[in-house]
Image 1 (cartoon, protein in one colour):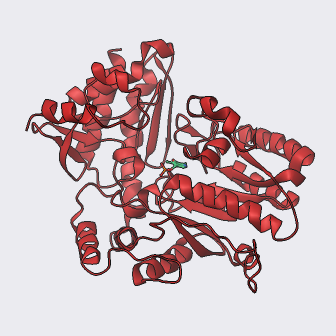
Image 2 (cartoon, helix red, strand yellow; image 1 turned 180 degrees about the horizontal axis):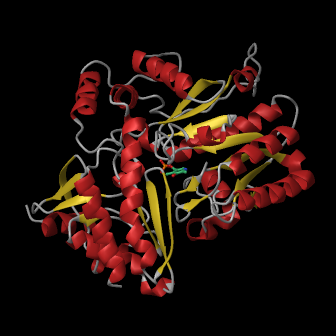
Length: 431
Ligand SMILES: *Cc1c(COP(=O)(O)O)cnc(C)c1O
């Protein structure tokens, strides 16, 4: 089969996510026949390095033999059972392990099946936990430039205008407080002052502050200092507000530590995880919370007291078995230690960008790197030019506007990383 055959059939029926479909009149879709390690392969045998881990989900490369084996064993044992009134070993084991790994006293696990749903769960639980103590707090607070997903609640607490503006009239109520302007301690402290003034004024109406710890990924890979999280935790405590850590993108080692919150030494009231959780195999998400929050819902049957939220695929055993396999790999292969070397390669390979006049800033947190360009209008769509240049040379990256970024699978070799970053460098240089 040729690439063009499958793309023509695709365009007759499929409406793609996050896409102006008309772009595909000129921009070819990439039909992927198979993938192994960091490499995607199309129907004509062209190979591309997956420089963004397929939207940040694929931690250990594609078709990983161990995860594949555990998934297929699980599929022939128990593919699914509902999680209301039933349980199964993969979910139990995963919950035990996540609680052991998570910071502090996060000891309760609620399952969902995608990141946005996990955010919805955390928002609803936070509101409801206050309500169960007789407090009505109908507002949520989030950071400017934040992204928490696309469902109505998650979109409401996000702040990326491109995704949000159209739906403004139908969103739930939220307020935004400034994200630290840059990675300095001073910017973190300034942003905390702004947070405190909002809390002083509106604190009693707010259920929770939701943040993406350290890196706002969909928000053009904006990065800030851990000090902000420490100060935000203190302020949330002072005003009786929950802190929700949305670690959907940054969790599972991306920032160098297992969870980004660890770098600030803070324990959130809710932690949302998804994306890397199953290594890119199955949709799954969890929300971790404390026994204290859990206990506010725990009583003899009373209407409206319990958390009556569910999804059909809640805690799917196939997803849980993949997540357990992912945690096995972290343990058995000392991934966090090994990644330190790769983080250093990345820093070294990024260095040449800083000398280019069309580069405004190069930033890196763990195995997330971003190169911000300057001097281009949105109409120029430099992202497409860079995408195209790299794709023709066997590298798949997907710049966000004027920011190109790398978030490769952790199994990337030095040679592959060099190819990926040098190809992107040539693309930026030739703009
Ligand atoms: C991707 C993402 C989400 C949404 O997850 P989906 O599975 O795409 O719904 C939420 N928060 C953050 C920080 C994300 O990166």
